[in-house]
Image (tube, rainbow, N blue to C red; front, side, top):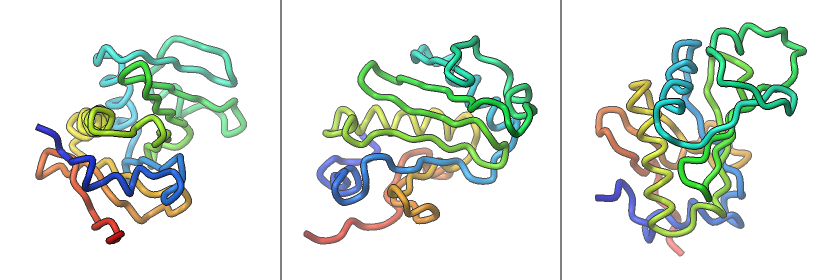
Length: 161
């Protein structure tokens, strides 16, 4: 059963209305939470690629990445839960886990289910909410993984069109 129905949430995946790259985040994170993300990615069977400054490397421990000097090359973790859906994590601060997805890759119920499953896997592993804010509207989540409900839920109602 789907957490969300496409017809009810399509507005939030419209790149013209919400921007093509919403911000997805886990607030109030820690080094241990980042390690949880790395662990779930490594154990999931998802394709992934970790790089620093464009150089592909093996997946490190979160503590090693987050203890690098502030002027170190950008650490990126690209994750493909399925071949046509990419999430890009920028590992630069322990306090918040954030990543981008391209809503143009998430059109229709099948792709929405993949996205919800991805959020759910991270949220369950961390036992924390995973929130999606419209591009450029940080702090105004429209949907996310709810720990108590153990599913992805709408946090605001879409406007009536």
